[in-house]
Length: 161
Image (cartoon, one colour):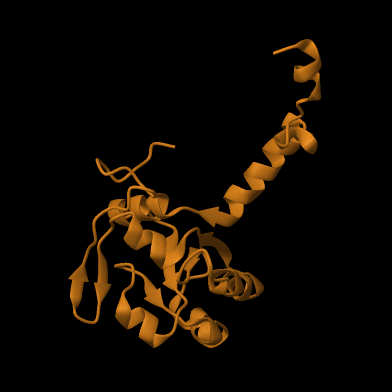
């Protein structure tokens, strides 16, 4: 390739310059303060880690179709009424809804935050819980699907990220 040809190539990725390292660190720290991934939530539930309560914010139909074992069921529309009755305010709430195409968990997280709870949204929602191969409860019993190769390694429960 000639010097002229390589001078004409520009990076689409760098068409907006990357943030300074300190800005990037602040941005990603803020994201992690608001979000938890499915694998981390699973690890906490499996270990019995204190301080976290997982809440399914979908309708009764969604809950019956399948939900994370150990999760509480509080539909978004009932958070203001029910959360103070069943969730200790010292706990951090992890809210989830259907999946990445649904903003229900974000709406629920907003409702929890307005009530004074520390809250995180579980990225990927119930869809990614199932796609990563974790067992779930349904109206018919415990279910589990094979790991979707595009979401998690087949050989374990963690991507070791």
